Length: 209
Image 1: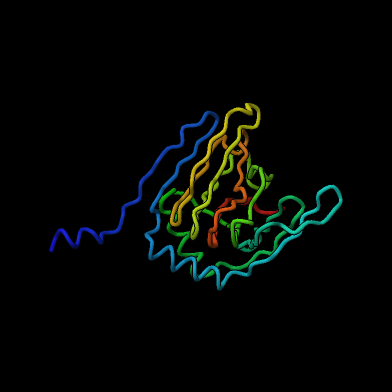
Image 2: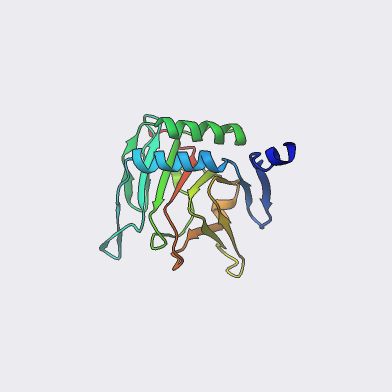
């Protein structure tokens, strides 16, 4: 009986330091167990106020290749790439994830940018999370729910320095210190048939004057 019961024990989180120069990155796999991950994914797909934003490139408007939403404390608006996002109040599911991330990192977060990758055709291009309101050494805590997608990193000045890792459902990726100053990251499109993925990136946003 003990042997059978052990097969159903929840897998404990595993923490891995991603060894890259000019970076402080940690990946926690199994941060949420599969049943919790599936429940949170279903709740967020249904309850989040997803929007299709538009970005201007060389004067032409293009739809962002994913759906997004911004949730945060009052007085914490967020803007990136010329897009100013509407601030929505925290939902119960988001508060649950936020509390778990804060307990793991020992930090407080007042906002979260949510991304919904509906299929392998959705993506995010090379960028750094280095907006002025995030400070000089931003801390980004990123939770992945749903389909596993590849996360790629590229050094800003040493172009041959590259790295990639898979972000499975229930994982937590934490980027600290100089990471955003020296590295860009992206989630590329994939031809593989993959289901939806929700990514929650928790941030510390300075108050607006």
